[in-house]
Length: 387
Image 1 (cartoon, rainbow, N blue to C red):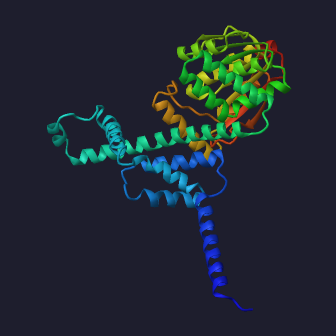
Image 2 (cartoon, rainbow, N blue to C red):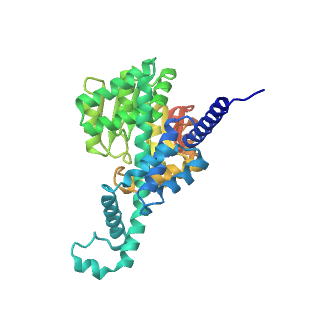
Image 3 (cartoon, helix red, strand yellow):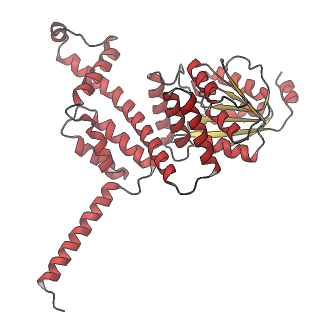
């Protein structure tokens, strides 16, 4: 078969394009799911804020290729350290490092700067970077995950009744609560699987009157009422601003929210009790006491969402995320105290409940699990046995 010069050029051009396409696909790593987008952005931010200018491209490439993350997206995030922003990042890292090492901010005079010496500044930069890098990485990754999930959800052709209910709940916060509460609730409903899991549970199991212990901004209770999956919701939390947001958003619904400490006796009774993402901020003894109080207040069902410390890399990622958000005061917990799930189920079983544990992380990288405890022994009998 005779091959003309034109055929050879076309074959070469096609082969080169195929090679380029293959390289591009390898750099992208695969379908850009919400988890992969979040991880890619997190890696880029973590590397981009380090003072290793000139090496960011190679460092991002070295991390993204073996992990099959999206290199172009990750490197775009790494460019947070463009010349206009880099000085502010450096100052933030120095301030953090100075506060960690000396308990105070940077000196403002040139004489004080000279007196400190270059060695201390290098230490402050290193320590500040070690703190700042995972913090901005975690927050940026979480925000990316929420945005991708939200955008893809809106692009979907079919909207389920649950999707519409989630939209209605978010709009309640848009029209009645402060903007930060709205943005938080909107991203939480879009990204966190707990809302869907609780709604699905309510569709198969009568929830009746619901206590939401540690309700936060109250979006779970509002969702249950929006879907008529609960007859009434009573929630409490120790954060006044969150309680105010919940109260505003629940206007017109059979719900009440108040400020309270769940470590105190509840003084309430309901068919179902929710305890979501709360226990790990308490000591061991406080966790047991809260579980007992909640269990004794629930006539039929207790739903607990907690961190499982035995889920490998997921557990490590979740511990880091909790440490960052708690350390920066975003979460008001005094500590992060994660216990084996078996220790929590034992308390509920002692109160007369049969407990089922299932994963509740959805497409997120976290180690959350859901404990659905159904009463198998009458409350009075369980309380008597515990005495």
